[in-house]
Image (cartoon, rainbow, N blue to C red; front, side, top):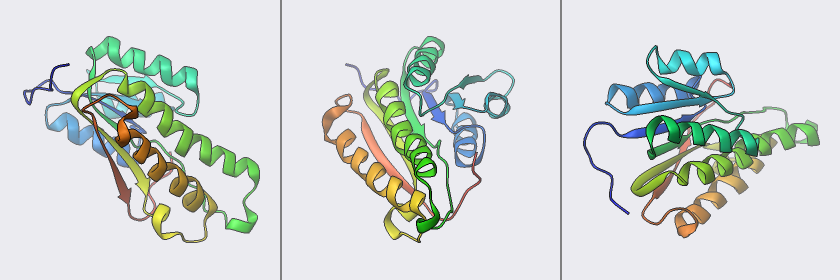
Length: 187
C-alpha cells in the first residue's frame, strides 16, 4: 500500500453533510482544497453543501445496503478515500424514564450502527495514511439524563473507536473520536 500524498486532490467523505457540523466540516475541507463527497439522507441539503460542481450522495447511515451503495458511489467518483468524517447523528432529549424502546432503537441505529457501517464501508476504499474522524456528543462522557445521548453514544462511540484503532480496519489508517460540546441542530 502506498502512503497518501500531501498534495492537492485529497479525497474525503463526510456523513451528515447537509447541516450542522457535517456541513461545516465539508465546507472547510473544500476550502482547503479537498475533493469532498457530501453524504446525507437529505440529498437536497447535501447538494447545497457540495456546491454546483461537488459530489452529493444520498445515504441512510443506519441501512446497510444504503451505506454499501453510497461508498461504492464515492469510490466511483474519487477512486478511493483519504479521509472520512462520521458526523451523521441524531439527538433525543426525552428524559431517561420517558424514553420509549422505539426512540432508543432509532438513536442506536443512527448513532452507533450508522457510524459502524460508514467506517466499515469507507475504510474499504482507504490506504495507509488515511484518516477517520468520528464525531460524538460530549454527553457520551458526562451524561445529563438523556438516554439517547448517554447510553447509545457512550457504549457505541468509545467502543467502536477501540475496535477500529485496534486494527480491525485498514492497517495504517488513523481513527480519532472528537467529542462535541453542546447540542447541534438535528438533521
